Amino acid sequence: MVARSGVATDALRRHVFPPSPPAGKDALRLAGQLSIRGQNKMAGCRSWFLLLTGKFVSLAHAEIKFNIPAGRFFSYELMRETFQSDFEPLSQLYLGRLYDDPMVFKCNKQHFPDLPEWLRFTQRHPYDNGFLYGTPTSPGKSVIEIYAVNKRSYETTRQILVLNVIAAKSLPYQAEFFIKLREIEKVLPPAVQVEIKQDLQKLWDTEALDIVNISNALDRGGRVPLPLAGHFEGVYVKAGSEQNFSACLLRAQTPERRLQCAAGAKVKVPGGCNFCSIPSNCISWCSTELFDLSQLEPSPPAPTLGSGVLEAGEDFAPPNSPEDRDFLPDYIVTVIVPLVLALVLCLLLAYAMFGRREGVEKRNGRTNQIQLYHHHTILDNTDELRSMADHRSVPPPLSTLPMFDSRTGTRATPSDSPRIPLIMAQHDPHVDTLPRK
Image (cartoon, rainbow, N blue to C red; front, top):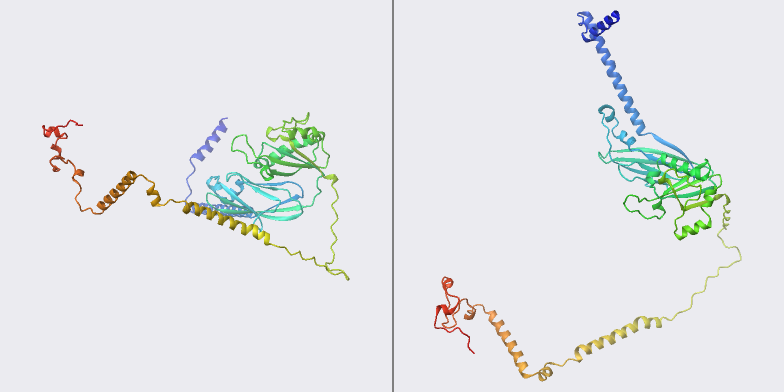
């Protein structure tokens, strides 16, 4: 114990108090070794920097390839974290800074302005991930260009997605289910698809089940829900299998249940068929449809195409020209009759306006003379007032001036107006102000 403690004490002393640097040639040799080690470390850092930069550049321009069987559902999630690392790859490594920028994705087929007809894209909000989803119907190859736009710095990055659709056998038994309490963005993640698939496998009583298609209810003619809690758009999920329908699925398509659904009654889940592990993944039984593709009717044969040239000996008989038609009755009904009616109406209006007027002389002869005198007096006074208004230089009547004395005919100056009494009896006590009959 003592020896060990002594050794530990010596080691601690050498670590805390390092020995003094040697002098002379030893010091020069030690300085050269340190410079060589520093240069090696710098070269190693530069090589790591170049390696990381090349790795990021290769990842940013790499092509992502998928092999998709025809008739099977395909979905690809555009992760914002992946594109965030492409925008600023070294900020997190050296600065320890991680951004969470809003992004908008633009997807199109290479050398085309839009996506293929079987492929759809959705993104609810710039802070949400985007999804490419759809079900290819025929084999082929599609190259999809994905552009991500950073709404904070307005940088742009591109990703190439190669979709190789291979031929596959179609599933003979398919069923479509309606999930009322879901939206398309909440169903497309792989984890949610696995949950829905597990419930459908229990309902179908088989594990050999594949999802054929997932579509939004709005694309199928559904109504836009209210922006309130508990209201969802709804999602249609179509699944298929090589095994025939289970008893639960067949029980949901009985005529009794169809009548109940048509009447709008609340349909209960068939007994022993409730395999919904999550309430939001429960299906609507009235919207369930079964498709038996194993007994499809053969398509009618294609019509045989001829040479397009008439056979010899046959003459072309053009159709007969139509018989001549007399348009005079139509012209009379559409043109002459409206003109006659308009003329009659104009004559009636002219008679009512001009033929039934009394005239000024007849009116004056039937009017009382006193009434006419008052009328003419009013007109003469009006003309006189108008003529007086034309000549403003004429002094106004005395009765219109302020503080006019009707007895003396004089008026007070503006300076004396405050001292003039309002009642004339106060100024002249001999004036009788009592009313007389």
